[in-house]
Amino acid sequence: MTDSTKDEAYIALKNVRKSYKIGIEPIPIFSGLDLTIPRSDFVAVMGPSGSGKSTLLNMLAGIDLPDAGELRIGGNRLDRMGETARSAWRAHNMGIVFQFYNLLPMLNAAENVELPLLLKPLSARERRVRVGKVLDLVGLSGREKQYPAMMSGGQQQRIGIARAIVADPELLLCDEPTGDLDRKSADEILDMLRFLNRELGKTVVMVTHDPQAALYARRTLHLDKGSFVEENRAA
Amino acid sequence: MSSIIRQTLAMLRANLFSLPRRLAISLSMALSIALVVCVLAGFLSMAKGFEKTLTGTGSPSVAVILGGGTNQESGSDIPAGAVRVLEAMKSDIGVIRNAAGNLVSSRELVVPVEVRSNEGAGERTLALRGMEPSGPSLRDGVRLSAGRLFAPGAREIVVGARLAQEFPGFGVGDTFRLGAVDWRVAGHFSARGSAFESEIWADLDAVRSAFDRQGQVQSFRLRLVEPFALKTLQNALAKVTGTPLVAISEADLYAGQSSRTADLIRLLGWPIALLMAIGATAGALNTMMSSVSDRTIEIATVRALGFNRLPTFAATWAEATLLGAFGAVIGTAASCLAFNGWQASTVGANNARMTFELAVSGDVMLTGGLLGLAIGIVGGALPAFAATRLPLTAALRARGQ
Image (spheres, each protein chain N blue to C red):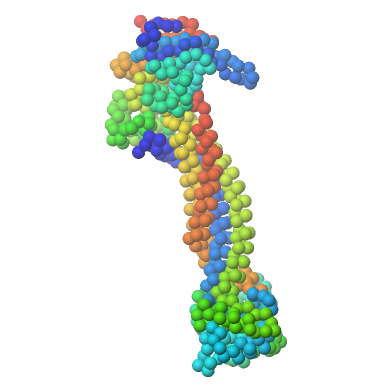
């Protein structure tokens, strides 16, 4: 599935193999997966349960590694990096939006958003300014002191997005970002992701079960039994 | 501030703020540590109080001569002839002499007597010390707190202040039966809380006749010119033939007694406290494991955001250490409130009861506190390591909080 030239590829998976052992029997997930995603693309990955969506996302996040093959993002070979290097790479290049927000309940909105900035050499004032800017961007200005438990699901996901983009990463990985939201909130979140992609040039990879969510992407890849079987482009 | 420290502080803050979710188990960890600290502090304060009482008792300027091959008063026997030889020495033997040129000294005898206490605890053995009229003046820090001293030859007693409080019938002017005869209480004395306050003093000849110990002397106390004069006295003693005599300073006599008993108390206390500490460490480990389990999603989330393993380890370990420190503070505070100044008694020298105050001193609190802290540190290490090994995929699979 290559629709771009190698030069334009921001994300490139080449002949990636991955299997999990259940008992002594290895269960293959990918047996030679290829994928290229150009910079500033917005890709939705769909597919039935067990098709390998989560494994793909984990590998793109550097949380999981392929057994064989090449995993290159922004010119970096993630498959050759150690655990510490991948942590540092995540901190500087990637934001994750989780299905269930994964906000730390004992921290308020501003503190949750600030977490990725703690990994950067910024002063407290610089961090505060950047947190204020992204909270403004996601429409939650003035809610800095609110705790996650005091917010709706949609608001919590906005905080999740603010946390994902506060360090200004190039890549946004979204794991079912609207899976826990009502339609209206889901559309607001998807609008926001589209804005981040189109206006700020973020590369977005979104795993979703929701066909309507996939419509916000520039293209949709269908994964089944470890391979891409179909690709739809947005009109 | 470095990134690692910022990450650690952020994670530690999240850990501590989430403590209310684990309030019961976290409190039980702190309290079990507090209990261990209390037990150890209890034993150590007992040893410390005993030591304090006895080391505050003797004076280095007073020599005690003992005979019969023992270095304790009980079992000691000094022949009258040996005392006479010493008294007859006109050369400098390191001992102060009075205006008449006689040695400032006191022959003494200790008789254990059974006395009924006012606590309904049955009879207790107390030390009745027969001494010469100069005996009280040979004790540093002794002061009459009521009445007067015993009259020479009379069946009168002066009672240590602690005994006077504890036992009925020791009021000044009361008559008290010790052995087969009645004694009149002439006065009370205090001795700055030292072991002297656990004794009853009477005239030597009166004690000898009441207990059929005519001629017996167990110890011979002498006021030295200066502490270093003990050597001169020992040289003089070597010239006394017929019986082996030893001269030791009064301070060393009581210090020796204190170290033996205090060591015994510590020998009993440390193993008990350490056994309890092992149990508390297992409890701390369990608590921290459940803390890590409770925070799996949070830990995996921040790790997925790019946090390192080291801050994960450090924050979990710091949480355990802080809980350990909290337990140690509770334990030391509780032991200070419960034990400090508490009156206890034990069988001391001469097989008689000796009363002393438990002392929760600074070093006792420090030792107990460090043990509590060590429990937190040791109990938290393995869970902290486990926290760094959590699978990050947990963050992506997680259901919301």
